[in-house]
Image (cartoon, rainbow, N blue to C red; front, side, top):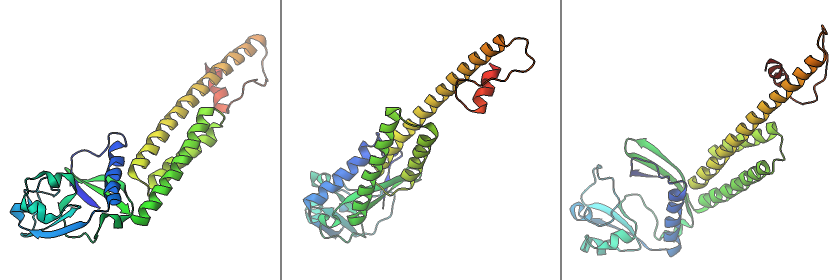
Length: 245
């Protein structure tokens, strides 16, 4: 997990979250050496591109960690652009010798923890592989539901159950955060589309029932009781609403 200072979420659709995965996995593929060195806090703070929580209190000397570029080089010339070309930060916890040891990386959640501070949770290695694979499977399931709705060949109560189940499954799944957002946006839009179509269908059915009931009443004018079977289909409520129009 990683804390960072930012007042708004990493969003822009899913592009920014996916972009984080792409950048980190590019570092993994390059398999750069992970350098770590204690340095004077005053000098280390001047390193260009340094990531740190600057309202935090750090020891002096402070441990500086960099991927692919030797910390000694950046400490020797902290205003040079080298630090802006890689990941360099104050950190006491890394145990990697090379970036490639992570094998794979994906952000699984991003959320606020306090005013102006947000937290990223990510997984690496086999956990990342599992999350990516699960995300691809859920995307395939979501695409199948979307295709079924677009075909029009569905029964509302069945498809809305599938949609609601997909929403719940997606929310609970440990998958790439960008994939989760992508699926959520698609399924939420699909649910709104289904609800609108159901409302319009019900309204049309009520109007059809109303017209047929009016026709029967006019035809059977003067009868104390009328027993007829409506040709249109619908629930008791559809028929009741139709008789009131």
